[in-house]
Image 1 (cartoon, rainbow, N blue to C red):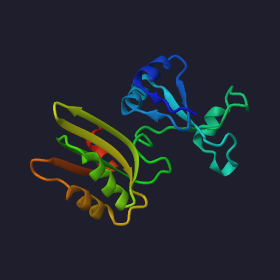
Image 2 (image 1 turned 90 degrees about the vertical axis):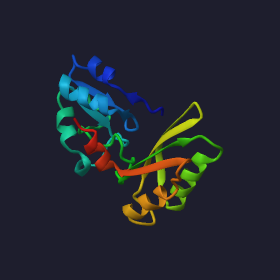
Image 3 (image 1 turned 60 degrees about the vertical axis):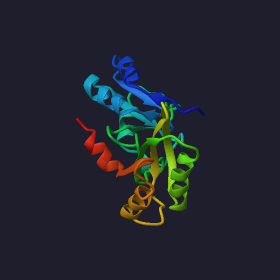
Image 4 (image 1 turned 180 degrees about the vertical axis):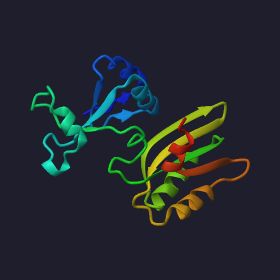
Length: 180
């Protein structure tokens, strides 16, 4: 099953029907969430299990009952500001950013330290421009071997002046900072 990125254009295209159905593994961008509020489009996420037990069905199940065939997979309401950055199992996540001079093994240093701390990289983006790199990692910190402060300190200790700088933020702080 392929994972798609749901954009604000997808939300705008669904404005006529008022509902946008997304798959269980689809990534809904923050811009899409904002557009859903603006365009009054309800985003619903398919359950990974076609027929969840009755206790697992929530608000989205009531909305699904109107005019939707029973063969349709169960959907849960996708609340704005949730799951876009979180790890798939709902564990807390950290946003790790690094910027600096590009050199061999720079990304390996960062990811190795994350692995040593039992962090799980959920998503990653990297760019190299004119000899400089920037990377953003979304890390599942639900099973790290230390508390968040220890995780942050261990990663930020990799920063060296003239080499690269790492900043670690909890996803809740990151999300709150970027809310309009």
